[in-house]
Length: 324
Image 1 (tube, rainbow, N blue to C red):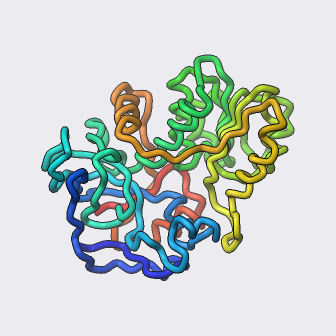
Image 2: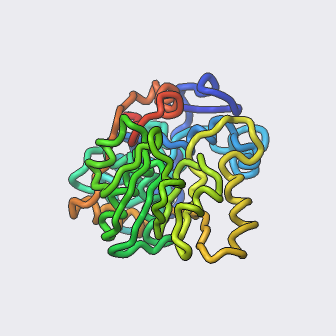
Image 3: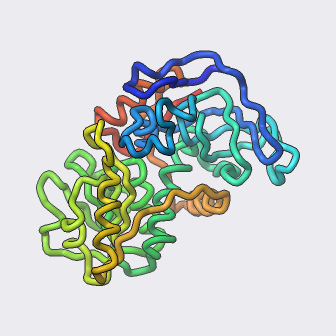
């Protein structure tokens, strides 16, 4: 099969589009013929092996997972002996390393039926980004009707889902973005939009019960200044930064751990958890009309390196998708 492969850390020139062996599913796995896969900041971090501390998980000298890509949508090609509820021919979406390929092998617990009203391109945009937003707002921040929520990075891949999910849970939502994305964020349902090129939300005097940070571009004290005394700050560790550092965006995590025990505000890191149950919950939000993926641009699989470059260099809004 064709796949986008990386044998060493580095820039886009380390990605090769070439033939590799097709994976074989184990008993609890599903083999999916990929129709589309989306690009995330995660792919950039894995490609570069940055921050350096992340190589403990990614691979010390070279990437453990040779094929790039994380989330996908496609059609079940084969199912392992212990898989229940999915069969060849089913349209699915999910999350697994190796999605930039014609086939991907995925654990049964990380794949579910695709929302019927979405195209493969739209569905592929969801698993990692929408799941991150769902966990951050529903599980960590425990958003409920009437809560004031600020999303820092509202026009990005996770942010476009976060604005919609917060509204679906009845929150009053403020989105932070650049001038060119103000109308996009407003169209997603944000009650208020802050153009960060004109206004500093950390010094505007308004405080929020929940701040969901998807960028990592402000200090911990800045974020705390925008919180109510008993508010919740959710740090995702996402976004881009100048590569080559030891900690990168995770530096905020370490500062949080030092400060959190001594303040009344909840300062929380967003955990990454795959689950079929969350994919089902997201599908229900889509089918009820409360959640719609926004895809800015698509690229063919052979141009996946260019898709990652677009996400970083051109400050893409919403999602970039690779078609197979």
